[in-house]
Amino acid sequence: MPNNKTSEPSDSAPPLVRFDAVQKTFDGENLVVKDLNLTIHQGEFVTLLGPSGSGKTTCLMMLAGFEVPTNGDIYLGTQRLNSVPPHKRNFGMVFQNYALFPHMTVEENIRYPLKTRKVPAAEADRKVAEILDMIKLGEFARRRPTQLSGGQQQRVALARALVFEPQLILMDEPLGALDKQLREHMQLEIKQLHEQLGLTVVFVTHDQSEALTMSDRVAVFDDGIIQQIDTPSNLYEYPANAFVAQFIGENN
Ligand code: ADP
Image 1 (cartoon, rainbow, N blue to C red):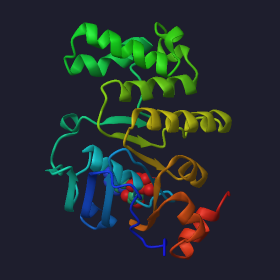
Image 2 (tube, rainbow, N blue to C red; image 1 turned 180 degrees about the vertical axis):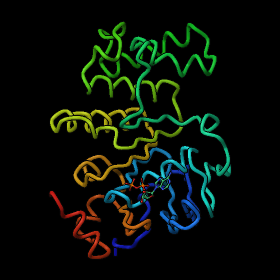
Image 3 (cartoon, rainbow, N blue to C red; image 1 turned 90 degrees about the horizontal axis):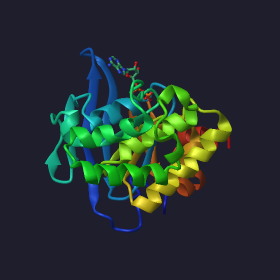
């Protein structure tokens, strides 16, 4: 039966990230992530989906390194990540409010992660030009973020997260501030980049249709627990329990 709770992708791509019995407690008593076991494979697009307050962002923050698990371990390949600081994880991040630098142009914003990594200028030039072309923002290279629309700004944030070719991209509600039409357009764009570049993406949203459209697998959260993790079609056809059936069914 395809409705088991830990269904893995059919191809056997190597595991990249592993949460092993991870728990997170805030303020000594508020257990918001209860027992997280999750493996994300190289090249996968995995979405953490669930209602507000279910623990999705806390999981992403632990993966990013901004929060430390109270119990359990997080691995990147064979490396235990628990207390590796964010800047040493080298992940690309796109958050709803992960603002661009307002005093820098589009091009300077995108170049910034290469500068901090001391990438030689000629190579940085080439990478910035390549990514500007890929996200179709070349003509805006010399503008500042305030001179761009919300969708264009989010594209720049995406370019800034991709330009240093991170092994993992983390996105938390990156399209939450956009109107419906632009949101749907950006969903397709991100999905295309994922496929073209073979990216591994961990994406957080509370929007069922966004999760089902974009993901290889979706982890459905409720109350700090993954209720089911599976492909979009299996979640839809074989929900593991009443919560998943009801939550996946909403707005569809
Ligand atoms: P989601 O992303 O699913 O909306 P979160 O992971 O943001 O959920 O939050 C889960 C719970 O943890 C919420 O009750 C939230 O108030 C609490 N929480 C999140 N971050 C903190 C924090 N830094 N300190 C205390 N409580 C927090």
